[in-house]
Length: 191
Image (cartoon, helix red, strand yellow):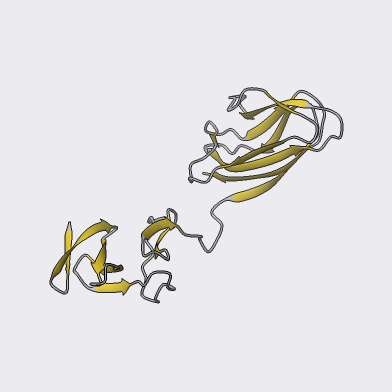
């Protein structure tokens, strides 16, 4: 696709009805231009500058999948996730100390749990345990792994995809072989 800026053709991509192009400045640099599909210029950018009030955020119809368009100090256009104004994930503390299955997110009939992030540590000063992450129907997401005293699990996913997804109606649990204190947090969606 090509957009014409001041009568000059410039390479363009289109996202959600907005055209994004790079306009040559004549000195070997380029300025990003955001236009409506009708060709009206909505915003232009200078490398490293703050976005103007007319800048466009592109989002999914449900408020997720937010993206902003920015330029780095070299003038390269980057499209990256934007921070939503409200959290889309629910956070719960992980606080379990019994051997066996420890439910950390209860299941809800007809709903699926999607774990987005999870972090926990073995707080026991001398005892190790084997841990398996499961849904409450005992579907295992991981094999049994050894958590040494003071060891941690750090499931921080940065690409927006869930780490684990339960079966419908099931929650999430940590199944451990020893009665040691596991402490941390889990971030999830449930629908």
